[in-house]
Image (cartoon, rainbow, N blue to C red; front, side, top):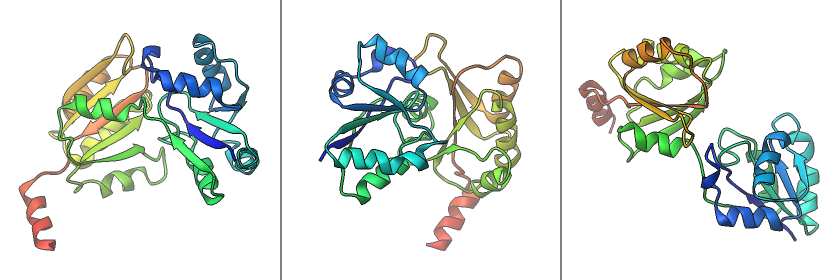
Amino acid sequence: MGKLYLVPTPIGNLEDMTFRAIRILKEVDLILAEDTRTSLKLLNHFEIKNKLVSHHKFNEHKTVEHISEQIAGGKSVALISDAGTPGISDPGYLLVKTCIENDIEVECLPGATALIPALVNSGLPTDRFTFEGFLPQKKGRQKKIKSLVTEPRTMIFYESPFRLVKCLEQLAEFFGNDRMASVSRELSKLHEENKRGTLAELIQHFSSKQVKGEIVIVVQGNNSKEQNQETEDDE
């Protein structure tokens, strides 16, 4: 029986690619990529010539069974996303689930992901946090934010640069303008930016500039005395 490898790829700086990740990608029989055009640039840079097949959220439901059968038949397969660790706000979960259900070995390599550097850079508490990924774009968006109003842990969100200011405004509406937060963009790249402040300050800062790159928003949890008292009473 073969094996499924989940291989993280750099979120920006190609020097963040690990030796092990390069070796695995050179050794496997097949590489599954979210966007073959994007991944081909990475593979060419490291002189990786293995077969590359498209595997993304629009076709994964149709292909997971066939892929798992290939692995069960002895092929070793690596899954990569455009950037970061597969399965974290990227395709991967469904294939991993299918392989596990069929007793196929799955191995995830450690490597790049945007949420941890953004969290540590924020200066907000890192001992307990919740990763919320992308908020719903339309239906259920405000309901989701409202459900997090009393969340005591540091919260991490992914967001598009085109919706950044609107997202900060919505967070401020429910969490308050004075809630501390941090916005990280272009992590590991030449123009990396980590901006910290209140939600109101961040809204002002990013409203006055054109924003590019992948965005990570880190928001302070609710640590008000009233919330802490309610939690103690519940216990």
